[in-house]
Length: 220
Image (cartoon, rainbow, N blue to C red; front, side, top):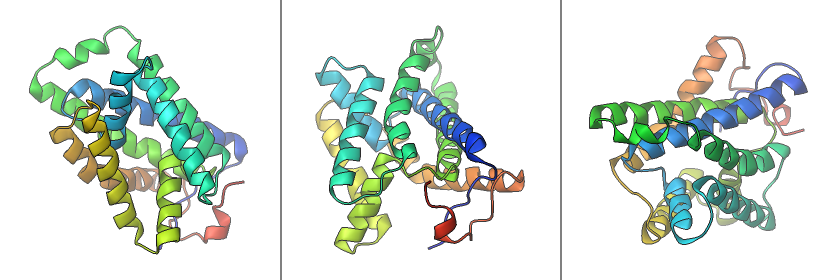
């Protein structure tokens, strides 16, 4: 399997890229949420938890991510500083963005406008993912669970990820989360969006080629 590109530069630059990537990821989630066309599977679960607890959507994101992080660690997953930052900062950024004036009004726009929000949200998630993975400080909690699940079961990563996504979407739907055409679009579009994000970083000269040996991109 080809390893993902790693951002050029020292710790300060990569730490900035990590924080920036997580902010862009959160921005994409907010846009998809306000589109009203359906959330990504994990955010369907987060919204379902939000509906049944006193937690905000962002706080639910943090709690769910921390639970997944603990599960991945208990199963032998490799946890890095980026994993913890992913679990905490995305939810905090989502709440901060959601509190801004005008954000809630986005959900009242036309279907065409909200479709643009959905597409923009997926692109932001893709670029944000490319940045925080490229920072090489550790995979996110969900990615860590996917990797350890594949290693323990011997099943292909793609199959493990698909099963996890379907399972959390079903649980989230049962809890009242929003499933719609956007959920399917996200599932089909987020992979190409991440690849596009890596491509943009590579063409701008910010990242190494995706053929770097695994030992050189391990979290430090």
